[in-house]
Image 1 (cartoon, helix red, strand yellow):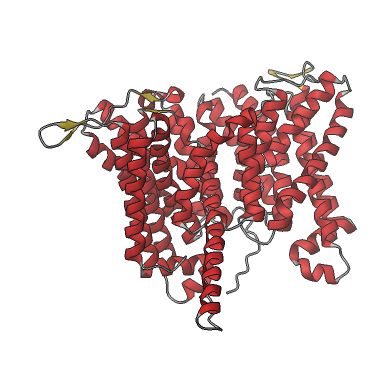
Image 2 (cartoon, helix red, strand yellow):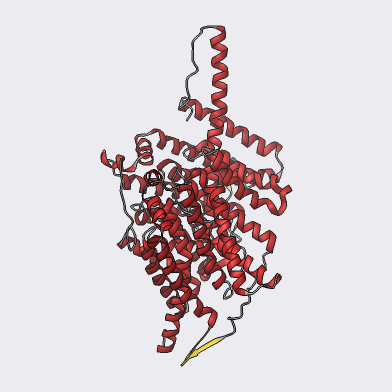
Length: 292
Length: 340
């Protein structure tokens, strides 16, 4: 691998890593608040991508307007998802995991019926704009993902750490009961967090789907990737998630660079397993309290 | 569980299986017979998944991978090395058990959700090996032309492996699995497993080596999954990696939950239901898988104890009915014995 190719792969790794971080932030947020494993995350991503496709291609809306609409739709879908699948089983540990598997099977096949199995591609004005720098050249669409990830992370940080609603979210995630004694309405906070998670998944959905094909089963792999990162980062920890996302993105692009792209999924899980053998609770461990 | 004497339960079960065999071989047509054999295979699979998930309380998402290891190892040995099928069947099950041991050693010390995700990952790795190691496994096309087991020598003639023989073998396998698992359940180890499920930390505090028990349960379960896989390979005679993917594992989870976590009888019922339901849902056409997903959500939300819970409710109803008759007729104040 020459120097130029190496740089290209690093760049690709950053793009993939940013995508994964964006994908995993919503998962982390919900896990941090409610300890829920949500396997339907990738399916919301997939439906968001399809919705963007419908907005741009069928309705002829502009890309950015569609992006805003997709955010609203995804937030709404997440709130509905919570209402249908999670609300009743929040108490017991594996309930949400199982219902979300059911929801994801449901949504995959719904998409298959509504949109058919043919892969679609979302057209954007930035796909054909090529940025060249020396030997490197890449489309603007690819480049957009990195600043989008940075802005989203900063936005999320400000929201969680500096605003009243962020403080309420943190309070509820620490102790829901005590938070409600302090005059916080946990139902409202949970509602709002799911809406944020929806917006968070809409961002990569709109930005990345032009680079790949949109098809009903695309969500499965993405959910798996999101969980590799979330586990590696230490469940519910946002900084850990960012680091893990970048590690995974760079690993994958290097693996692809060596021409083994068929094995990417296996290798990323091997990285996870090897990593957990060394640090069983992720890069930054969650607060662990156990009582008998 | 309904407390009935084990011996009677076993006898009733044998009778039930003999009846099923008689029905399968005399009344059922080829298609129903086929469904019955598949039900047997999936019963073993779901029961073994239930041992780990429902009984020890380790939620794992790679059971289809062990099924796949059993199927592929047995099929490959039979195709390439021409080993006798009974031997390959056993080797396949042992290979699955061994991979279960490996996965257990790697992942069991991780807690709840970490374990679920890591087991999922190991399942994906197995799937990718089956899918990508084209020179060995023929990749996504899968293995076809897997040989049938050799004829069974019988008095003066030999018996071919017809579907009805497979049904007999399958029923014996289900019975064997059921007996082994209920024996484990009733033993001291079963009690330890229950303790781990209820509160792992408390179990560890009273001196139980929780990891060792968990790993053994995992190994046993994957051994039986491998056995089911071997039987599946030689029965259908064609296997493709897609059958052992993450989605297949997810469907197994659905089956286990629907049957009732921790109830092996429920597992058998739910395996039968999931094999026959697709046929009933034929009317639903393309909405079939939809209904499948929706059903999973509904079961967890409204019947968290699955078919076993439903069965117990019915049984309890009978008990109450009987109790009331007795109370009215003979002695007043007799209460029906509660079913724990």
